[in-house]
Length: 193
Image 1: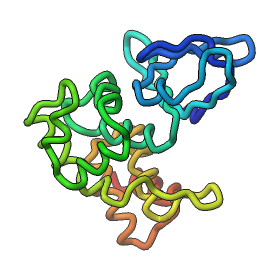
Image 2 (image 1 turned 45 degrees about the vertical axis):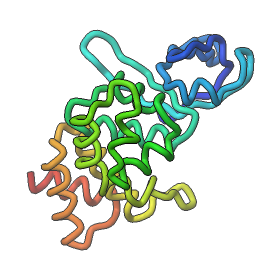
Image 3 (image 1 turned 30 degrees about the vertical axis):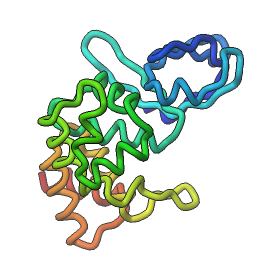
């Protein structure tokens, strides 16, 4: 997995960035929020990334902050929300406003975002309200907090092919056994499934 990239911004357009890393240039898809935060081409930048492998071609998504990437990954867990729609949502309002609208159940603020109708707004609220209530898991000295461990373990299980409900149940079972380390939780889930 590519966690972040750092290089020279070569090209910047509303949803597309080109970043040169030594002698390689990568195309990153990005929200308007990220594009607006970046300096003019020619400047050195760092992007937090998410690599999505598709049958047609891999796509690399770039984000100005870890928080935006975290919200993007959470949006992808919602039924019917793909990567392009997640970028539209992130482009429609400041990240903290989107998170707050989801936590507070404010569908009116969400429907103000292009391509988010009342049904999608309700689905987003239903599926993300509790997940986003505490905000992004805190990282202390490079190690995720306990809540962060749970989120990381769930993401690892999703990457290994578990369904969301199956991953949630497996992590809860591991926590009931007193396991707190990400690797222990994932190993336990793999053993019992």
